[in-house]
Length: 119
Image (cartoon, rainbow, N blue to C red; front, side):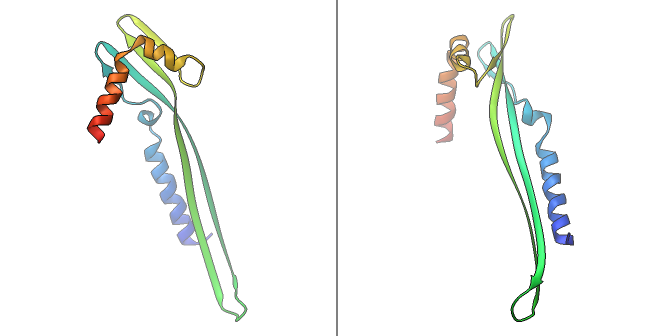
C-alpha cells in the first residue's frame, strides 16, 4: 500500500469518526408547541480502496491508488414527548407517520414554515 493510499484511508476514517457521533444517531430535539420530537437515524456506510502498479507497452513504470466512501442516512423512528405521554414511533412501519401526525398535527405547519424559510 502506497503512502498516499494510507494517508487517504486515514483521512477518510478520521472524517467518519468525527461524523459518527451520538448526535448523528439521535438527532437534535425539535420543539413544536408543548411537544418534543427526537429523531432516531440509521447510518449505513461503505469504504473501498485500491492500488496497483505496472509497466506500459513502452516499458514505463506507473502506479496508482484511490479510496472512496459512501453513506446513506435515513430516519428510523421518532421519540414523541407530549406532556406525560412518551411514545417511540417507527417510521418504516405502516402507520408510524400517520400516528405522528395525529399526535402532533402542528408538525405540518412547522415543516411548511421551515420550507418557506429555506426558499
